[in-house]
Image 1 (cartoon, one colour):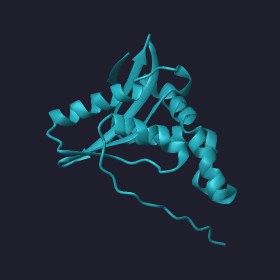
Image 2: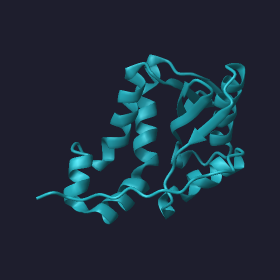
Image 3: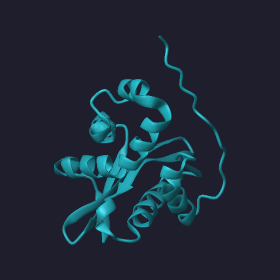
Image 4: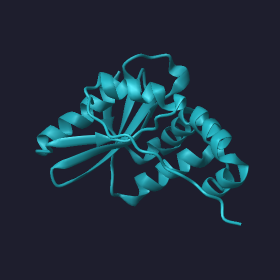
Length: 159
């Protein structure tokens, strides 16, 4: 398993991984927010919404992107950005059905090493506090993220 910079030809696999990895999160979000709000937030459907978000992020040119490969197949991706002394790990996921351990850790090491080379002093990552995000929280903690601020996002449907 190794991590490399993203290539344009990786897009379909990256968006498929994003959609698959976010299925439980989208399901939880729909249950929490209801159909009306979820349909507005994800107008093309929950099954493709995360892939489309990641595609837009990649195509903006404002983010670094890398993929993790195993035996010639992409099994994960990570996006990141930085401003001044602060770096941020953004969208990232491992292919749920790969069964491989360490994909996330390999990708985080790759990005953290890039940040160190760039002189980044602080790195942040944002994730949910709900049960669907528990695997992400554990992965970030294993990577060394240990300080956090908790917050909540409220939604209201206007009629």
